Length: 75
Image (cartoon, rainbow, N blue to C red; front, top):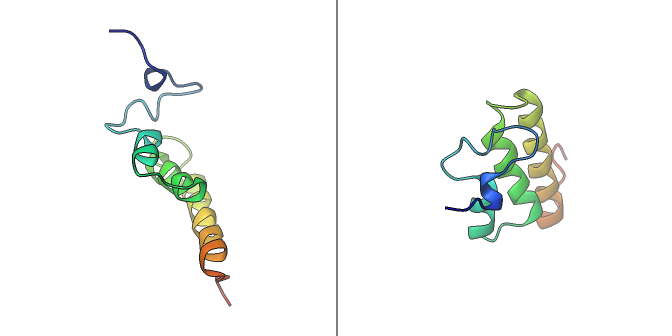
């Protein structure tokens, strides 16, 4: 069987170890950039950057709140 782009990961293996890679999930569900970024950072936080990745996911959720609902957290 030949390799596909999903078999290759540049800089680490934190996605290849997953049963379903975030890019596959995001694509199959037609998620936008912000939603897809939340999935990506939540999925990898234990195997890559820990709290930093959770903060990134939180930031993308706040962006969605502003862009989709014109809501600024804390207001």
